[in-house]
Length: 219
Image 1 (cartoon, rainbow, N blue to C red):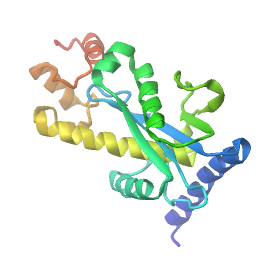
Image 2 (image 1 turned 90 degrees about the vertical axis):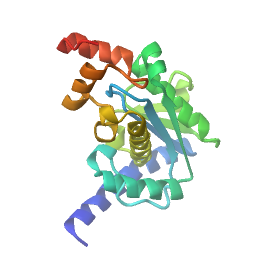
Image 3 (image 1 turned 180 degrees about the vertical axis):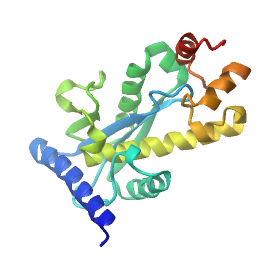
């Protein structure tokens, strides 16, 4: 086995060990949830909730930010095929503008958990904020959870791949902004396009207004 493959196996073992300890503690299914797209200027914030089969570890699972796009796609297929349950939830640009990005992110995670349609004992949430719509005693926050928990890492992969596909689809409708490359984030090209062409239907008005204030971007 190569050094790289061995390293991945060690990471996988550590992530699953974390979840197994929580499973043993609470005596039931553990749901990992995470979101992506908080810092984007356009598009939804997307969250996923995942219940993994802890007896059948999926080697290679890791924080989605540490994986290549190709590796995420491969793991997406594995997770969606072999997880006990998984679901995706989102909050729209309009909801982000209305609620603020933190509350919209938590809403997206709640929607993902609600869609699981199964009994569970505990939700482990990436970050340091609990989901308001879930009882506090039924959830636990894990700072840096996508690098700590297998279930949260799996959720980060599902959410990232799902959102990337959504932004790829939006690129077909709004090719000027090159969403297939920037995924809605504030790249130099994306900022120039907003300056030249204005905002499209999926831009977050509040985010772009802040950008305009910071950069004197005329919107």
